[in-house]
Image (cartoon, rainbow, N blue to C red; front, top):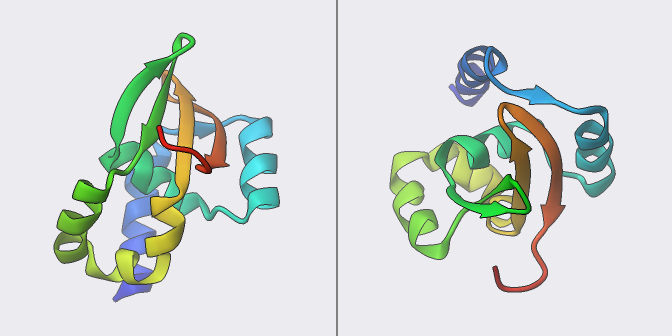
Length: 102
């Protein structure tokens, strides 16, 4: 069931989202799975920063996602809570761990 969700999730999202080389390197070096990055971009809160957009998931959203996306939240709860993604248009520039309050 979970594997099927990720396959469908990736097929839908691969059409619109592109990763820069920098984003791929940073995700791999920081241990951030690509489904988590795409989940944050699709469902997270967005703020403008330096001409780009920063996506992250708030505590309030996390509480509602626990019921809506049970499987992905069970696997990646801590990673989703502590990750922010920077995008420019449909291109993901980088993903980072949140160490301070946004």
